[in-house]
Amino acid sequence: MQKTSPSNRLLRLQARMTSDHEHMNQNKFSDSAGTPWAGRAFDVNNFAQDDGSAPKALLDALLAFREGRANAEAVVDAIRESRLLIPLLAELTESAEGAHGQTIDKSADLSIVTVATPDEQNGLPVFSSVAAMQRWNPKARPVPADARRVALAAVVEDNTRIILDPESETEFAIRRPAIAAIAQDLTWVHPSRNKAVHQAILNVTDKVEEFLSFDLIDGDEQSRLHSAEVQLELRLKPGLSEERLAELMQKLAIGLGESAEIAEHVDSLRVKLA
Image (cartoon, helix red, strand yellow):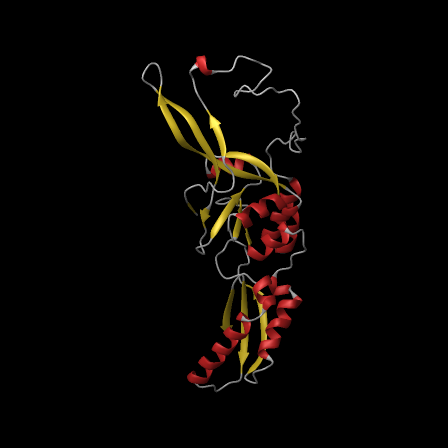
């Protein structure tokens, strides 16, 4: 998975770093800018006791999924209840020359990272543990967040993918519809098992007598973005000419493209003639 330049639009933290002691604040009752600590309130850190290890329930769900004992919905449900780690990467924005001629980093941006996914989409990488993040990039700095906050961050950054533990055995891709469901605290059902999706396809195929029946199956069984999210296996009346077949495929594409249910619940679809 190719790493791209950090995105600075969502989170900009100025990390001020200097080795010049004469500029350091010596007053313990104020911060480095001289602003008094008195009167400030600090939010409770819900992750204060976090040791950086992967949540057990999440690992159990991922293992069950890989072994075929659980479906993608179970993994997404485990993710939405888990603490995730967002990687930040430092990008130098200002430097200076020190008293002895050395280069001093004066200012750096800590930026959320966007990656290019195998299906040519933008993805937000997140991690179940510090160890998984360090294997991906030793320079990344972990920021803990709940799954809903992560999903909202992905939406704001126009990321249509969230990639859990990229380049690890526990890698799992969350596509656009599931991201939206997590962000809105809604139940997510894989489109191959979603009744609204089945009905939307039926509404299209019922209008054409040459469409006999169909099956909707998981097109990316390992959730690693190796293929379209779902595969529509379509059975047609035998003996159709190539010209008529092309007309039918165009009708199908138009009908599915006009469906609000398909747009909401299906990320990508591939048609296979059975």
